[in-house]
Length: 186
Image (cartoon, rainbow, N blue to C red; front, side):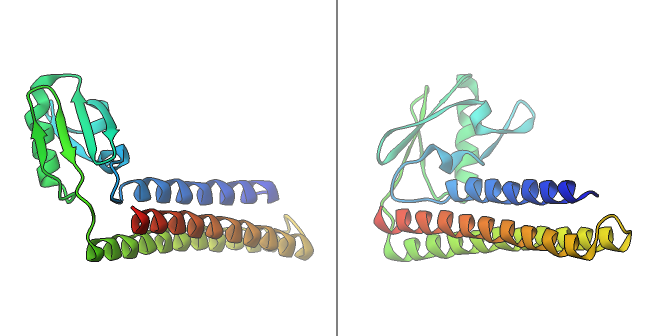
């Protein structure tokens, strides 16, 4: 791999780790209704597990309620089953047209668990970012060994990969901190 390819590959993979963290954090419950809570939910509809957002519109018209309006009302029962089977801990209310999910306020213990889960997710993202750094450094060493670039270029490349690592680790920490604050303040 060339110098630029190694940097670009490292940055793209670190960006993906951050994107995954953002998606995971969206699924963590706060005291407020957030359509992101049910984004990862898969519903057994039409014979295969399908993401909920492909089956209907999800909105949060009130601070404590999520409304799911399926495009096809015949799958209301399937959506209801998926919500009950999930680990969200929410009871769906089905009125024949839409499903309403009332979001209860979080207790102190639940808030602490959510903060702990947030920290776990952030740490997983940081580990993924560090693994990308390790791979980038391996490619740099291989490039130097194969005489694609000099020892100085190899060192410079490793420094640039380290800068990327710091940048994305800080992003992961900032995202986690913001989510923790949201969970504790909600």
